Length: 434
Ligand SMILES: Cc1cc2nc3c(=O)[nH]c(=O)nc-3n(C[C@H](O)[C@H](O)[C@H](O)COP(=O)(O)OP(=O)(O)OC[C@H]3O[C@@H](n4cnc5c(N)ncnc54)[C@H](O)[C@@H]3O)c2cc1C
Image (cartoon, rainbow, N blue to C red):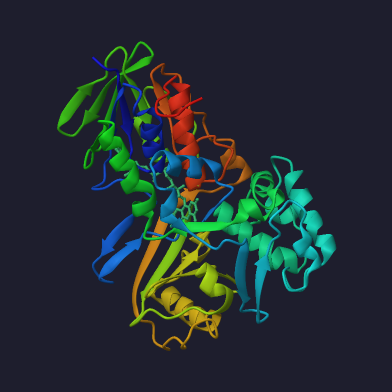
């Protein structure tokens, strides 16, 4: 009989592990607690808005190699969209000004010498901040490595908050330095922004499920693992509320759940397992307009806009839906979400003024506010030390998840890499050559 590989958790890390292993003659079974796969990156039918939306806007860069490899494996490379130039339109609502960051395609940053392509008000000396981040020690935080000035305020600080989902005064400078090395330092070709044409599930989840189905992988939703039995240093059974599945001698398990769930399931088997235990939230406000407006200028090419000097950080336009992302949102935990939503609508109207074919109405339209309380672990120097590797003290169990030691922040790229690392930690190779 084929060896069985149980994957607990059908988020992107679990699906990545499943895709990695499927096709190898091993029988892959994904057990997902929720009604659908996708975890923290999913699309769903929103009854209030009367349409399908993503739980939150997700932005990828062409630098996210693991994502593109995964999309290639599942045949979904053409489901992403984005401009063919590395451009990022911004508006500053505090010191009013619009600009478009227009990076050079190659590694030589010619853009910094052009007043129309760089960040307004930046001094060339501020570029040293990038080197200071790359050279940061593991204990330093982002704010102590940024030189004061408009390059930091208008670009590096917002970039840090979005990439690490952690305020700059506590976020790891070394981790941001790694992100800079993998993106900006490689030039604009690595920084082309990408996001799903239709939705997160249509790009990252549904094609993976179709791929697994062809390879006879099983995906069981509504299946919450409530216990893991072990004996003699290996997993021997997975426990569900209504069932116990024996894990055979040759079978393996990949635990691709969130950090607190993994720690809970393994508290008896691996009492010394340390995982991240501080989290940051993300606030998303989705507004459904009466009609789809026409975007103008560089906003027409990107359909997203960075906002500085406001609660709003990124505005995305998808047909008649305007969605706003606010990262590291624990800062606003004391605020009433409805009131926050009203403030954000006021900021959106100002930010998009002149970027749409007609002004937005003063009153907020139909809205859905989604506050993901544990969107990611807090990327502080102390929390990074708590990220465990894929390999565990149990011979047939590996860990996956954006919180494991991927070397990346908690992102789609990190979760997909973690699934690959877990498969490799168990010596499992499948549809992937090399
Ligand atoms: C609002 C928001 C915006 C984001 N924006 C970006 C972005 O712009 N770019 C980017 O790269 N990343 C972004 N991220 C991060 C990205 O979504 C995550 O890093 C990624 O989706 C995590 O995937 P995962 O598989 O590691 O974890 P999860 O998605 O959390 O998957 C874990 C899965 O395990 C299941 N599960 C839990 N317990 C059990 C159990 N006992 N039994 C069975 N199943 C169980 C859960 O239901 C879930 O499906 C964002 C995240 C959020 C929330």
